[in-house]
Image 1 (tube, rainbow, N blue to C red):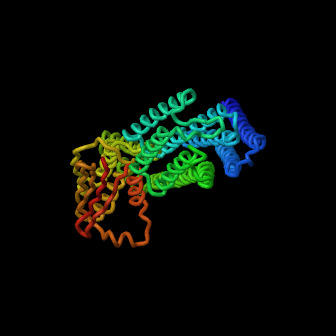
Image 2 (tube, rainbow, N blue to C red; image 1 turned 135 degrees about the vertical axis):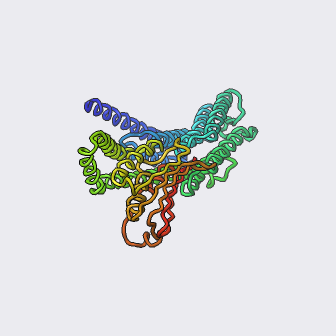
Image 3 (cartoon, rainbow, N blue to C red; image 1 turned 135 degrees about the horizontal axis):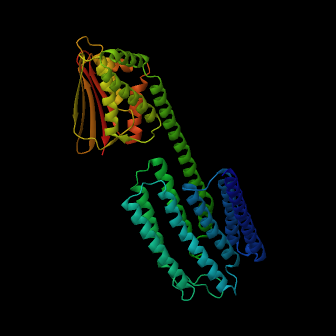
Length: 467
């Protein structure tokens, strides 16, 4: 298995190396064509080609970093690499078109090169959307945008094919320049449609501002560059050159920034989740020894008084320990019914110790929702240990679940000793059980945990889980 993995990795490296080698060769071809056709004959063509070649070199370096700094190019990195490759192709054909632009006798060559550059430049929108979609949750809106964008792009490609035989987008005159007789409304309308779709997908997403603004920049940069590239003779030369620079250098930097920021943010979230999981593991592994000792002592006493009940208690105790250990490795939420079964096992064991002091009441209206593992049970444990057991006369713990229009709600209430919530927060001690549970409820199911308590009257813990 390891040998197969090593072989695959070697093949992957070879493919990446060949790809980078091809990109370097293509960049050299652009340089050779620019020199051979003397692009310095036109000042703005020379400057535009210099920017194109710098952009191609920059994109090659970015691709190299992406290829060899990442173990695998999948998911978001795959779509980022696809976008960079399409941008490279668009810049490559545009550079070759610039090299022969305004040269008589190259009408067909310029037409083919510009057609290819149009094809790849408009492909930037589609690849940008597929990259952006990796940050968005799948929805009817994202599916609709994808479908419309693909349909519009296919129709535009058909128009490019037709343009090779009958000019409808642009026409190259025998002098090697675009004819002013053809006004390219089709490309302009296509740009507007893509711009509108990408903007809608960005603005109506649930991304935070740190991502929405860079995405909007990435949307408008290629639009500017593409629209400026439609007619070399109409557009101001400096503006055209700046459009190329924005497209080939600024735009990739924005996307690399977005990708790096997202990876950093994901790493931080994963570390927090791992830390939370470890805290849960520590919390479980450091279960109060007196609970274990007292359970074993109770079982030992029952062995003589009621062997049948002792066997039942042993099985319950075994189930409790096994479920605790199993829940440590659960990174995903579990159904409330599973959590409730674990609670009932724990409560049954506690009632063996306090048959006359502890009373438990259940008011369960719904169980078909998810909660983090060991999120409600510690609250029941706190109610028994800190609320009921500290009260001489004992008391009642009530466990309820119900639903509202927006939430599933679980409450754990007791009529025990209670406490001052503000004083408990400022007592300088680390309440890992409560803070950890609150964090997991928020991060894993988007819910909340609130505690209300009155000294001498009791405590109510409320967990709300959004539907």
